[in-house]
Every structure is written in C-alpha cells, then in structure tokens.
Amino acid sequence: MNLVEQFEDAVASSKLLKEKPDNETLLLLYSLYKQATDGDAPVKGEYGMFDFVAKAKHDAWLKISGKTKDEAMQEYILLVEKLKAEN
Image (cartoon, rainbow, N blue to C red; front, top):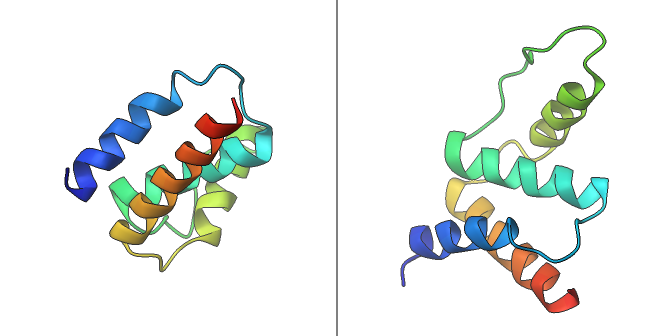
C-alpha cells in the first residue's frame, strides 16, 4: 500500500475511533490533514471575529507550515495508529 492509500485508510479509521480524542489531538489531526491535502495554511485565515474554533484550527495549521505533504501524511498515519491502539 502506498503512502496516499495508507493516509486515506487512516482518515477513514480516524472517524471510527471508539473514543473521541481530546481537543488538542483533534486540532493536530486537523492540521496534519490540511497540510497533507492543501499544503501550507494561508497567512490570513477566513473566519469571523468570534469564530474561535475556526481560529484555533487555522492557528494549529499555521504551526506546521513548511512540513511537506508526505511528512504530514506520515505523521497523521502514525497518530491515528497510536489513537487506535489506545482505544
């Protein structure tokens, strides 16, 4: 199985976890997914002044800017495997 197939499998598996991860882990999953699929985050996010969830997601994505798509996919896969093992 190549990296993209492993990533797609991990994305599907992440939706089937028995326990919902904590917010910090969810933000990491989100940011790694976005980095893997879209590349670096835009410097300015598109969210309203009081949309704190969107701001948190954008900030988490910004923190990993510069990471290659392959690196982000690999980290996402490893994180999902860790979460599956903990469930």
